[in-house]
Amino acid sequence: MAKLSLEEVETIAELAKLTLTDAEKAMFQEQLSDILEYAEMLQKIDTTGIPPTASAIPLKNVMRPDVNTLSLDNEEALFNAPQTDEGSFKVQAVLE
Amino acid sequence: MKYQPIIGMEVHVELSTNSKMFCGCSADFFGVAPNTHVCPVCLGMPGTLPVINQKAVEYTIMTGLALNCQIQPHNVFARKNYFYPDLPKGYQISQYELPLCLNGYVDIETEESDTPKRIRVRRAHLEEDTGKLTHVNNHSLVDLNRAGVPLLEIVTEADIHSADEAYAYVTKLRQLVRYLGVSSGDMEKGAMRCEVNLSLTDPETGEWGTKVEVKNLNSFRSVRNAIAYEIERQTKVLSKGGTIDQVTMGWDENRAITFLQRTKEGDTGYRYFPEPDLPPLDLDPAWIEEIKTGLPELPDAKMARYTGDFELTQKEALVLVEDRSIAEYYESVVAVAGDAKGVTPKLVSNWVSGELFRLLGESGRNIADVEIKPARLVALIELVNANTINQPAAKKVFGVMFKSGRPPQEIVEELGLQQISDEDQLVSIARQVIADHPDPVEQFKAGKETVINFLVGQIMRVTRGKANPQLAEQALRELLQS
Image (cartoon, rainbow over all chains, first blue to last red):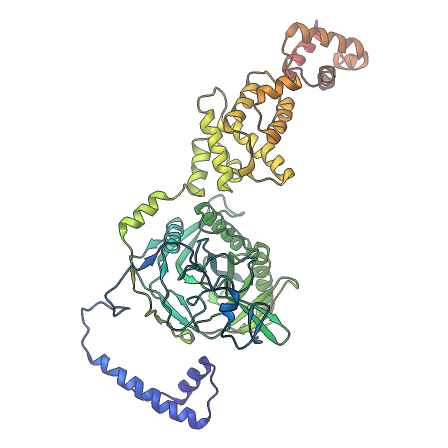
């Protein structure tokens, strides 16, 4: 597979909300391309006739009854939050 | 209008389960103190694992069946990745390639045609809701009570062609989820939220225009208004030779305009992949069959039965079917009336959609609180049929029954409302009325036929409304013609 383009790296960075320097972009271009190349080994395996699977564990149909369990109280829920206000997590304004 | 609107809708329905989609926290969030129905799972803390709420799956299957969808035997949940503070995990667990329900339809009533119009449902899938953001000055407050509440997304094909059709579709959808009892369907409380994909087609070239998405449609009124507004806006742009950009618009209810929200994120931006934390869901056909058997009778089937077996008109049936509890009350009265002579489904319909609706509206009470036992409404209709009381008296009795639930016979006696059907008595009253009103009597004899109503009215006045009007008129005519 061809190397990841610089543009693709920029798109991925944007989706991850990361601002990268040119040097970082070049570095991640290398690293991400290596990862893709590594994963490409799987493409070589012949999977004809094998149904696609979404899970590697031999489990299915795990469900729970619709029953309420105890929630955290408000102080516990916010315990690790850097900033809080009026019982809520406080974050920088996000307006697109 | 030159352009034809092509509309597809996405409706999110909040399922009314006790607990959230993947954890045991209460799914109730409306009016609840912020961040009190949260736990490590729905807060997205590392090391936690989601477990599927069986009831949410059941509700989705119920809705899918009611939407005439094929329920898919093999289901996989997927991660939809994006960063926003209302999404604690950084991804939403949803379904992508393998949704629970596929290829259904909903039939809606339209003004233009007597036959219902079919809106195809492309898919319906299960996902989790996000939290709620409140923007204050330079920051946002995050409440995650709603995060993880089961959400059903229903997507139509682009079969809708006007604001009215969209309105009819959403109304029908709300009726269905309420009949099924899977959601409150309250748009005002966010239990149903709509998005619209709209483009205009030039009928001459047949070319499809650019698709614009409109979000934030949180009331029935805004569905209608936003679509009408957007059709007008796009028509104006296209008429001047302009082009439409592929964007997401928001609807501002207060200013009644759409506004640019953001440029549209393509599906690839969400980097969907199968949710590794949830094993696949292979539905047992026996379970689906069991759910199917347990479905309540749905509005379309009821309509067919009411207009068929009950011989109601389309219009009469429609008002009764609209709300499931009204329909059930109506049917329980009809069932009791089964053996009673002359108490037809039509007569029962007149009482329910007439006096009962009027009093419910006046009192602001709910059908569930109505204390008139079906057998007592039947008894009241029988009293009218047997000429024991006349129609105005029956309405009076019904009013007392509505307040107290007491049996009609008792009220009739207490208020002395028994109709006077004794002919001798009526003849003597008629004679008196004729003697007291020489002028009208002259007019009648001179051929002014309608004066008879005035004279009957006089008998009703003298008897304080208790005279049998038909017999009273008969007595008058006999005396006047002799």
